[in-house]
Length: 438
Ligand code: IFM
Image 1 (cartoon, rainbow, N blue to C red):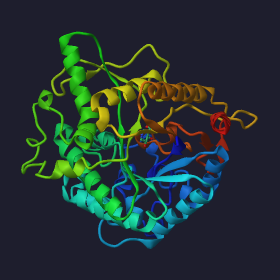
Image 2 (image 1 turned 135 degrees about the vertical axis):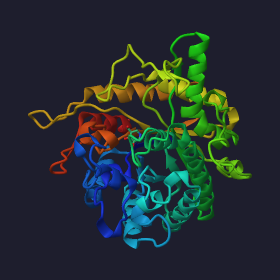
Image 3 (image 1 turned 90 degrees about the vertical axis):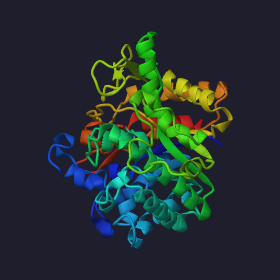
Image 4 (image 1 turned 90 degrees about the horizontal axis):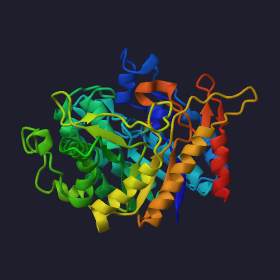
């Protein structure tokens, strides 16, 4: 069965930042630091989904969605990240799962979509190996409550983005700019994924996935220098997170003048870690937004330069719209991983637009309809070319808090008025509903 769904994430929609015993997350801290997020926006209220979740489940039901990918806020369930659990947090997700199931919608929770408990950041966050074990303990707590009803689980969302933006460049929480010294964050997240996979299975979870953000990498030219640079970028963005999970090995990082074990004092990768990380999965989640064009470096530092994809329409974010890049990405994964590639689920795909309700209240987002239509066709082409694709989730159900951009980038099928919380389904919602009715 092909899963059609939409996706959201806890910090981006829930609000209720300190309610019902929830602990602070690194995003609660980061958004309250001056200058971190555009216009000082925070997720304190966001879409107020914590209070309006029934309305949001009704929107999913009205859409005819077969699945809903949401994330669980670790500090809502384990306020300090380890130790005491908060029953009110678990109750919230329990009710949500039951309401989805009552509508025939498959719940697909992601256990970590970047809102690390601040108490764990105070111990070093994902730079600290212990966090991987705390993550597995938290996974066990959630699975213990939900695995009797939840079949499909995602451990991590986009560990590359969390490492690169959060710890490498500091534009996301926790706001550290460690550059390549952030590499332990990759390993500890992946180890956390492997340990959590074990914990989920022990609690009876039937399907476990990881979601990676991947991009087809286009060399700026056929020159040797550009090809080498593109290869180096592909290694960092894509292979660093797919290879250990699917092949049980890290890719060659020599272009960066390092190995996984030279970036940390004690061996970062210990005996047995890769076996844990590469435990078989039931699917690979892929988030696709656009390809990346890479040329030889122009300044010292990284072994590549992002030269930008030109000649395509762009989203409000300025991201190039290249639907066939999704086909290229999926067939490229099949080529690289062959039989090691489990079924693939496109766990996010979508675009931001400056959506404003017209005088009649209608949000006529024809650009999003064209975007989604083009990308769904690309998934169909990938399937025709032999990729076992089993799902497609639109990012996002609702306009929401878009990280460093605050509320400025609207990705939703449903417009949200952030003053009132009012939801207005856009034309793309009706388009997808009619398509799903088939
Ligand atoms: O909003 C994000 C999401 O949290 C992770 N993937 C990309 C989306 C758009 O930037």
